[in-house]
Length: 510
Image (cartoon, rainbow, N blue to C red; front, top):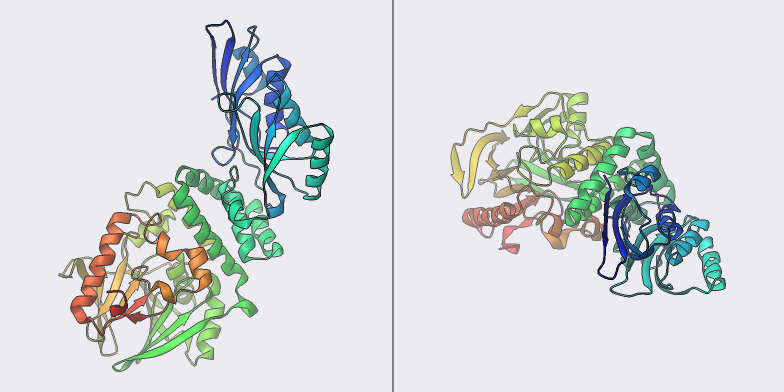
């Protein structure tokens, strides 16, 4: 609900402080400023930041007579709490930030806001503080039609306003930092860096026609606002995941790394355009270690056939964890070929609750929930209806990690090591001491091998160290513990097979 405070100053002025709520659309701020002006109240403080809350405005004012009353404001509807966002896809050159100089008397802020409203301007940020500057107000806003910017400038000049244009959206880097933009708008701006306008509009249409997706995206935005750094990182990854929708069919591409002979087993490695690496162990059968996004399923089958690998011969899939970029393919192989899929038992709650952090104690639980729904939907993640859990009885330890299970491929034995829970619940690693290989999932990535696009949008070195982990401090400890495991096995010979980027000898990071 809104708030209303009124008191009298030592010099007899009536002072007011209000927290009100207005719709997120052009003219709304002019209405509340105009209400103060109509009652002869001079605004001394005005604050609206749409990135913090799309409807909340804090206003303070003063008058020589007592003219503002709680019941009247309730009648006007100003105290009815809202959280409704006007979700727009904006173009960079439609965003402006200005400092305007106004006479310090009732009505001047309202008059300026009304002019903006006449040109369809939607204000994203407005701040005025008499104690800092009696005449200067700062504003950020956008218009749907960039042609109106010149018309608005001419009108302001005609009316004699003095203002400084501090920023226009031509500067992409500053746009990402632009005050007042909500996370969803930044998200669509990020998509525009990856996709053309037609594809971005398809995503918007998909969101707008699905109430669940729309509500989830708004929920994601709300939670991200409370955890800004985490929201920005997850937003980048979400945008990168959605770009996968534009990489299918003729636009699908991949890179095949040199196959590695592991005794009588041959290891094949494929890097799809986005998502995790695909590893295939070939012996008398084919065994997959992790996969990629589900949206690539048909393209992956075609890719394998082009490389003389029959996808129908993949009998088992072992998953390091239940994130969409590693597990999204598994359900498709299960449905078409009856491929058996293996995951940690804790993946059950991740799938059931649609939350990659389920079972952890992270304060980002809700943010991860919305993120999981969105990523899984946009990348068409499909988990198998039936899958087999790893055994969880701890048999022994290798370094800091319990050995909970094992499996064979050809003449090689692989141990399933259970993580300590730093990244997501149910994370495991696969180690063959005999072959000298470690499948590390989202740990021990070799950053120099990541492509520019991966670095820019996945931002792997950063997000794996901070906010997408269930426990960031524990994750860092696990990274060091995994290095110690590798060093203890074979400082020179162990090959790390990460979930993203190229494989490499562990000595490169020791």
